[in-house]
Length: 117
Image 1 (cartoon, rainbow, N blue to C red):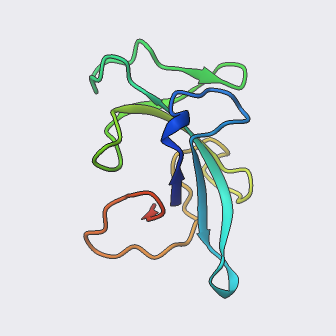
Image 2: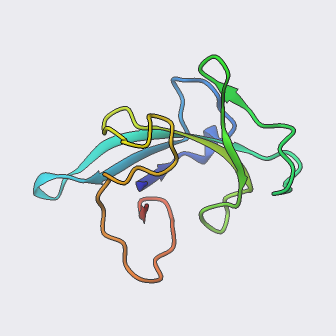
Image 3: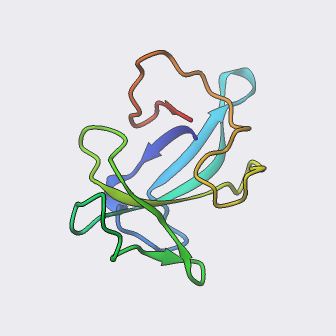
């Protein structure tokens, strides 16, 4: 998934112009390159086994989830990834993009600005 840069103030947004996370990978000369975006909507009932409040965007595209947070303060949520700047052989909206490159160290937690595949 690359490096995630979260803006918690817009969790819950389903506005196409306001994704809650920008996704980057390592680029040339140590600069990170934008590869995708992610919308994050907290799960209202905070239960992993129910999905009756699953949001959608882009004319009915359903979010993935509910899933646990990726870091300690992140709530159980729904999310939707869109790989706009890096082709994803699994599809534009697939959660995982096997072509994204970023180093992952053993035991590394997914946090703002940290690697996540």
